[in-house]
Image 1 (cartoon, one colour):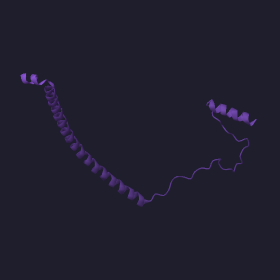
Image 2 (tube, helix red, strand yellow; image 1 turned 90 degrees about the vertical axis):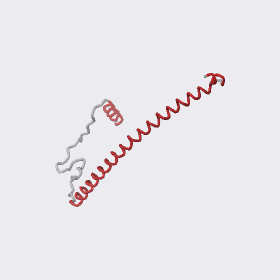
Image 3 (cartoon, rainbow, N blue to C red; image 1 turned 180 degrees about the vertical axis):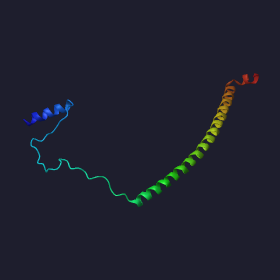
Image 4 (cartoon, helix red, strand yellow; image 1 turned 90 degrees about the horizontal axis):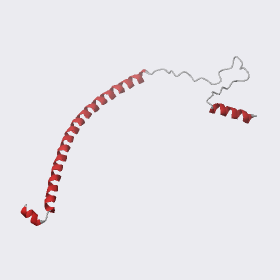
Length: 116
């Protein structure tokens, strides 16, 4: 009998129906809730802690501004480094082209190099 009830509960759960548990006997009027309630979350606020946190917040804001200034400086340096890198890459590309021309010239037989 119990197995049939469990099978019916599983089938109802699988079908997406809500399972509701109800007490068969009413509870006495003085009884508390079935699940105990948690105590209120409010606690006394410590003014010294609030002051310390505000001071720390101001310190962190100052740190943020200093880091932003460092980031701007690094961004300028990055742009300069990119310009130098682009110039070096183009110089190496020109050198590679000249070396390819030289290698093509050397690949010719010696008598063709003499005649031009």
